[in-house]
Amino acid sequence: MENVFRLVDYKDSFARRCIMVNGPVIVGAGPSGLATAACLRDQGVPFVVLERAECIASLWQKRTYDRLKLHLPKAFCQLPKLPFPEDFPEYPTKKQFIDYLESYAKHFEINPKFNSCVQSARYDETSGFWRVKTVTSTESTRSEVEYICRWLIVATGENAECVVPEFDGLSEFGGKVVHACEYKSGESFRGKKVLVVGCGNSGMELSLDLCNHNALPSMVVRSSVHVLPREMFGKSTFELAVLLLKWLPIWLADKLLLLFSWLILGSIEKYGLNRPSVGPMELKNMEGKTPVLDIGALDKIKSGGIKVVPGIKRFSSGQVELVNGERLDIDSVVLATGYRSNVPTWLQEGDFFSKNGFPKQPFPHGWKGNAGLYAVGFTRRGLSGASSDAMRIAQDIGKVWKGETKQIKKRTTACHRRCISQF
Image (tube, rainbow, N blue to C red; front, top):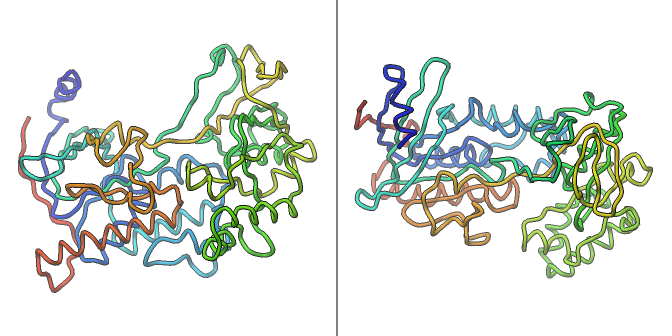
């Protein structure tokens, strides 16, 4: 209630209205939301896309480091209905991927409502519609809009919010502390002793980037991790894994992948990188943990350019104490500690989504809930998983839409009307 009164204080610059949407509302204009919108466009279903940032794919545009490339070949990362340009390399750069997404949105005439932050979404049992409340801010105005829709598509994804763990003494450290989402390049860390917390794909790649910029990175490895070469015998490791799983049980495919990895990379345990007891593909299926695809960090670890250290006990002024009792002098800390879903903060629903912000049903059943609720991009299977979700959702809604409207000509513009205006 306090928030309501605070908003009302804006008086003339504040408007509240309700809009009826003739079609689904998609929350999120990242790759998942764009893919779903494109597939709905292909089905002739109108839609509205809500995006809290002022651009599409804000994670890619604002919260990724400069040297980032797609970790998988482009064939596994392109969105439905429009492939990557033929002249793109096998592993497109961050800029190339953003350009592709911009052209994708333009091609399918996807025009999100930017700066529209969803505050809450709930299903109204009485009316049979979803009520999605948003706050839209510009330089001069702030308005609250409630969208009423029959279908709600959650496309905010697995990486909506940064995960920042608490560490004893971090407030006493005194040096620079950034999350990976704020890191752009190792240039500003040149000559500095940097502690990288996290050893996933981001932690490994940031450590490599720091090393290439003549910084002195130490990478915290608290638990076991699978490190695989990005390519094996001229094929991408991912492509090879998909091929093996077509013919072999997952445990045998894992054993072959680990054997091939050992032949290419050698033993990694002696460098402080212990493998989990469960194979990489089985672990991905069970817990969603992605194996690290090495693009050069392992060579730097072997040569001593990147130091592998155990978990953190506490920080102090200019230092970190590790769980083994060792103390390191450090200048900066980079938290490559990952991201999480933010769905529980705004979606008022407890049957489809769990408390961790992911659908309760495992892949491939986690795309459709009850009462017109859908989820896209929560499969822990990257862009290919999101594309699969998007096509299923569009076909499901399209079937109902066409059956009810008996449309002959495809409509491509979302229709909505103001139904309430107050304050």
